[in-house]
Length: 145
Image 1 (tube, rainbow, N blue to C red):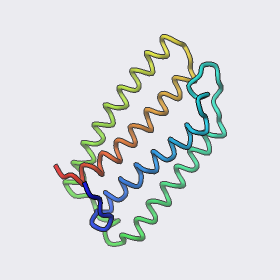
Image 2 (cartoon, rainbow, N blue to C red):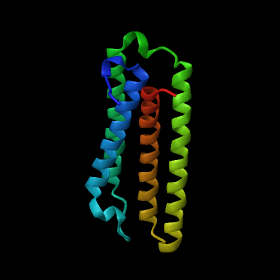
Image 3 (tube, rainbow, N blue to C red):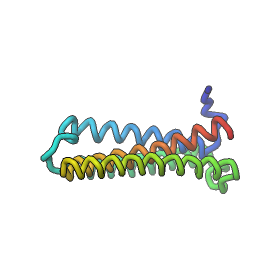
């Protein structure tokens, strides 16, 4: 599958960029925590969590502003049927991912009673589901269905 940036719609560009941002920020956050995020008995690193949220929101705004400037005529247009269908299918996939992660995290919590592990598992699942939404939408728009 060849990805030519110039031939993509603004929604496809946005989906690729936002999915990449989600993965980069997840790698940054969990990289900062290291192995300690998955060990029992640790406290929530509020500074890292606040920094993650700030950087993700700022990055999202920058990505969307740059895409809107680069694609002025197309950025404000309503999504077409194909874009709506791709987005709906990707959201369904993300729902399945999130459901599986939540079920696994709750089972782990029932066995080990570690709230920090529960938090980080659910947070990782949320990031994974958001990545599935964005990259799934982009993949479906690129692939066609």
